[in-house]
Image (cartoon, rainbow, N blue to C red):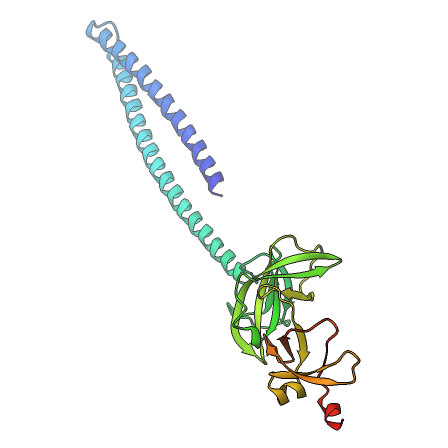
Length: 284
């Protein structure tokens, strides 16, 4: 609309300018005729009527030119005012349109990251407040592996430890990124990130069996806890002889332990057999 109005105003201005140009030429023509009649009048070579007529026509042309110039000036001022008003109105309309678009955009549910919808908990007609959590977006740019670890190891697990897991016959390396201090039901959570290549077609929610390396590898015998540990306190154990008919009491040293197993260290040969069946030994 503003463009068409401007085109119309420019066309009117061209027409008015053309009219002003014609009047200017008419004034010059009438001025020459008036000067010619004036010169003849001085020499008394023409009638006074012709002289007066030329003079009146010249003065009339001058007055018309003044009126046209005044009209053009007012028309230009009016057009300029109209254009400014329409420009201001157009700016206001654009601002209102932007406000409407912003309001419409607020109706869209947005996420701060790009990804894949993993969970969406909404119902038809539900009223959702700004900032309300209605789902989960999985970030596909990177993956992490979560693990639950026995609280016994909470002092030994820290960021930077290495771990591995195997899938389809190939090993993949992980690194502990974060250790959560909160313990629930005897376990705490840690996050791993991939240190190198990732498995192909990886999916959210997959389960991996991860080997976490807490320190240097050591050889030890793992003994299940139970009656043995409650009776001896982990200070000694019965060792069977080679034929398995007799058992001898021998001191041991308990190393690191979990709630179910107690790795122990003591010198023995490869034929030594341990026994934790205390009930059967007491009956003998």
